[in-house]
Image (cartoon, rainbow, N blue to C red; front, side):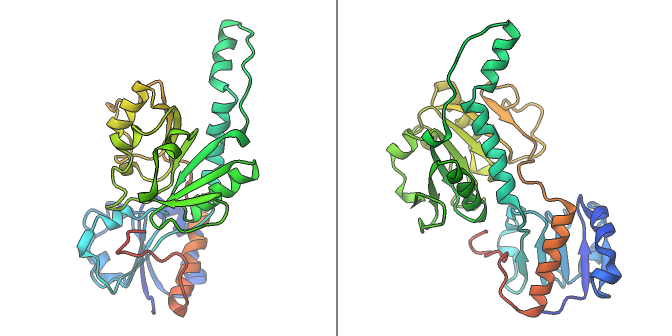
Length: 314
């Protein structure tokens, strides 16, 4: 595939323009860097490659041959539904997301096990009361999603002696998991005995609202961590599970609507920790590195490790 006209847009467009240096790094290809909201219909018709975190409001395929997501997730592109042409390639950014998400998750696990909040409260009261920390290698952890991110998360946890059970669509064995089962094989004992449940699943028709009232009804005092996609979780059911004691706490980094609306009850619930989608931020340098690597592979016709299966949604 030969790429000649590349359209960049989105929140990193200025940083990408500064880093790419069109003449040297793009070998004379014609390039447009257009801020989000200023992309015209003519820009889209001109481009044969579109590079952004998500489609613009006026997005159409025009003469596109290739769409490259600057993020790991592609659900905003998948929302285009049946409109996706078979001949248009879709790729996503793969960087150190697994390492970042592993560190993010580990930090909140240790915060829970080392009783950070409790000791801060005791300090405020001038209270000396010993509460023994809990060990990582005693934890039962279930990770939903066994792709690159899930595997790296499992590797990091396994280093500390944690035995991690993975759950995926296929149930195929993957490195660093003590066991992997399919979504349909879930049993009450696995969920009921879990200390931490971590979601890294992509958003598909199968995973939308997967974590619902029925799911949380099978959980017993686990901490739920969502670093996958916001729409995989029914937040009303999550709040009910926190109130009933099914969930001990929830750490949420992703939401169906971002920024999270000011009137969301998640903000004020004492059992919820909110972070603004920062568990695996794409840096401009990482975005450029992955884009250039993908561009070279696209034009050489070699196998792409970051190609998205549009039919499956990831």
